[in-house]
Amino acid sequence: MKPNQRTIGGVAAVEGVGLHTGLRSTLVFEPAPEDSGVVFVRDDLPGSPIIPADIAHVVDTARGTTLGVNGVRVMTVEHVLAAVAGLGIDNLRVKVNEVEAPVGDGSALPFVKALRGAGIVEQSREKRPLEIKETVSYDRDGVNIVLLPYDGFKISFLIEYNHKVLGTQYASFEISDVVFAKEIAPARTFTFGYEVEMLQKAGLIKGGSLENAVVVGDDGILNEGSLRFSNEFVRHKIVDLIGDFFLIGVPLNAHVIAAKSGHAANVEVVRILRKKLESNDGSIGALKTRTIPKAPVYAEDILKIMPHRYPFLLVDRILEIEGRKRIVGLKNVTINEPYFQGHFPGVPVMPGVLIIEAMAQVGGLLLLSSLEDYENKMVFFTGIDRARFRKPVRPGDQIRFEVEMLRFGGSTAKMAARGFVEGRLIAEAELMCSVTPR
Image 1 (cartoon, rainbow, N blue to C red):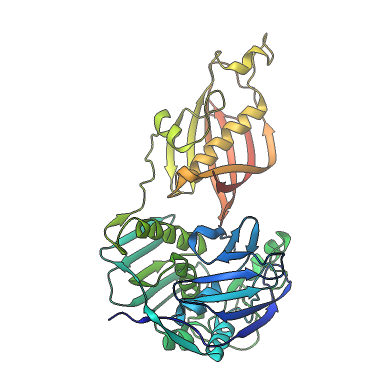
Image 2: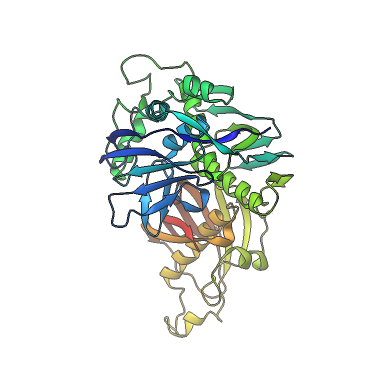
């Protein structure tokens, strides 16, 4: 017999600052009826907009999970949702009076205490969990997530950092409300000391401090006192995974084995699971992620991935793809290019701006070819740095573009791109971009 759905018996609140915005906010937890799920209510805005806590409303996964609808957002909800999921709560209204949930002490524990304080009550209808019937696997860019059939919910997690303080950590738990509250919820979020300045320059962690995050320096932990667990870092990764997987919209029966996973990969897997859930009877059989195109990739496959068409598709062939790390593409320049009619007709030279555009398209292919739902995504370039043109490109030249990923997190990326003709560097630039819904 399946367990029944749960909500809370009263009202509870958590106050504090938002980790990234630094704004003070209050969360108010309220009971909700059966089958209503979990929703956030922005009661500081006219009409009190409602944002459902499900995968369809995830709008960003950079340094946290953000939900939104019609331009209204609530940021950094993963610890709140982890507490809800870890305590087995199915239906809840969460009122918030700012754009970001309070960070508390950087763990899920403040939310667990508030929800338990309100009392957790059983409702009359049964839960409807998602049953994993056969192995589900995700393997991309060094991140591995496997879901195995299991009678219950179990998580095994591995992290591996090239850092003498963190190194390799592993933890495995059978998830219940008691285990979650005692062994997982207290684990705090963490960052590296060298990241702090970078995040601050990006306008993030305005509310961050040693009171709400563990900061890892070159030689040790910068916080006073000891860690809450010897493997607190991997336990916090489990907190994040539980919160992100709650966005499936139903409880999950599976053994989840994850290695080096974060918000972006968690959310990609949830999208896959949700899509399968909506197309069947509440169980999922064998499933594999879409195969990344193997080089060489010719024009017919490029057209399936890229939204560009004549005369603005400037990539003819992809020679190499290394996951989301590196890509090599070709552009054949012919006298038939339409821009040669007006761009120095007597001495035809490919416009520099189109060389940059061709670089950007190769970089866009690097990103899109690694996304499960690339058909619903577009890459918009948001910045160009250090652009230099070394040699002119003329009809008959073949440009070899080499693009390497410098940074990718959530929906934004930075790439280094170079173009060569006959082995000579003709142009280079650093490109910033954002992945958005098409």
